[in-house]
Amino acid sequence: MRIDPRGAAHNGLSAAVLALALCLIAAAVAGCGDSATGQQPSAKPVGDPVGGSVAALARCRDWNAGTEAEKQATIADIRSSLTPQSQEESGTSLSDEKAYEVFEHSCVEDWAQSLQLYKLYANAAAFAPLNEP
Image (cartoon, rainbow, N blue to C red; front, side, top):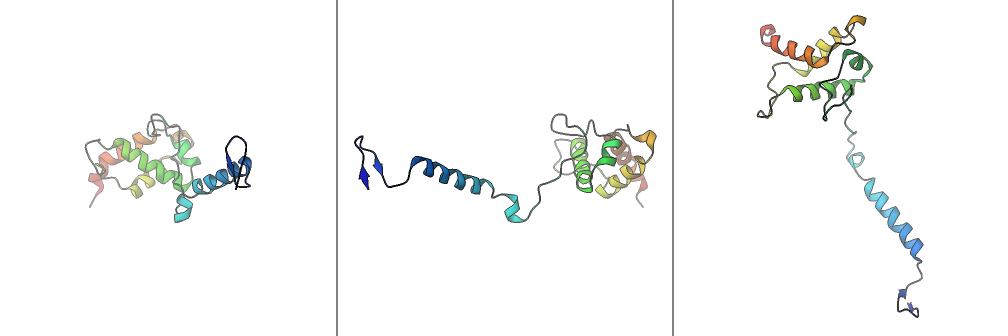
């Protein structure tokens, strides 16, 4: 190790090389996330978000344009938006599978493209107990 006239110690590594090495290490650590566990990032729900939720603005046209994962995320988002804050579990008797069927059936027609998904969900949830055997 040598000492320069200002008293700083040098071990042969320049400041630029050291900075580059630190950046590479930081990038490698930042890249370690869900991919290391094999989990895929969760899909985003369809529609335009308002206040962190798409429930208020998601329409049939958005549903029809979504992937299966986005559709499942949309159902979860609408369910959580319609569940009272005081409840830990969903307060609806409408299963995710039944909600999926309702949206798939209701959003088929061209005239239905502007229907709001949360209204379809709320109506189906209200009548779900009457449809149980």
